[in-house]
Image 1 (cartoon, rainbow over the protein chains, first blue to last red):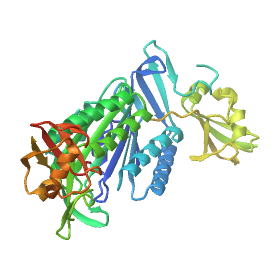
Image 2: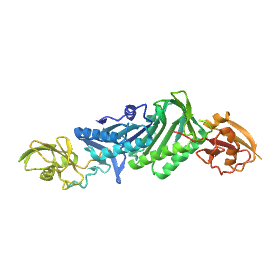
Image 3: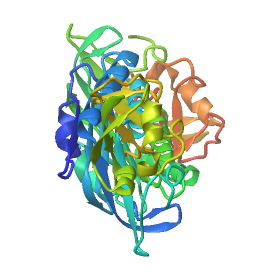
Image 4: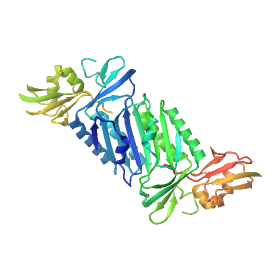
Length: 142
Length: 142
Length: 80
Length: 80
């Protein structure tokens, strides 16, 4: 299942939904807001998502993960709105019978989430400027 | 830091110790007790550890991870004693500036933990038998 | 001519100064819509890192456009 | 002859029927201790998947043994 939320993510609560008596391995990934990006001091981040497509594309990614890794349970939550340093922006959790598949499935999901979901982030810098991440090359002005 | 404990592991509490304003990625792994191993129905597991060497060897593994992955924070907790299906036997959590290093460091730690720490597990099966995992070949009797 | 609703997101929305607009244009595929709105969204490389959805379904720049479609123009994504 | 304390773990302890014992033996390295206690721990392949520690420090089968050492015999581990 994929969720978008404007509230703080509680990883522990979501982790429980992945329980399965046949699961011997659990792997999770979280993206945290860090105070620096490409040499610039970051104060906070703003996430924008286009929810209908983010959800349908996210469900597609989780289904693809399930096809690749049998007996997988996978769940992903992505924050939107204004986030502060240390906040969890995205959480991915998977459970699987074995360790190797759990790591690979978790990695697959977060890698795909990052490149396929219509989600954008704007960094607010200590120098007062702000910028959309990954958008330098696509735009006429910085 | 490495810990051995006879109490239930609380991943969320430990996860907080890895917070760092420069950390953009968090990866965790948990080993859960599953109800089956190599075709046999498992009822519960018993973990035995030799604590002094498990701790010193565990600290060595975490230090090696820190050498390989700069700015890493890593923590590991392993249960001992009697565990039931679904219980968390081991938790590894790491934080790091970037995603790739977080996944690789987490994987490195759990892989090393599994082969280097003096920890043993005895499976108790539904048919009334029990057996030490990995010990078939080293012993005169099954 | 087709009547198309175009929606702009993130940086594209900021450049366009609006969320969406309805255009009557001669467009065969999504790339035509991207080109027609270039002065709005400010990007010159449709086949680059940008993405497009038609009626809430991810599409490609070669996807055909029908009268009444809603075309969503996505600048490079940055989730996680 | 050296006086060595040998400690058994997990399956080795179950086979030996005891946690530890003190032996006075002619042993140069850890492998010698393993061989001398073979009938206790029940394993015939020291260089296999078993491990050894001397005085709480991981060692190899070629590590020298001194009088008064405590040798820990570890059957194949299975953490996690």
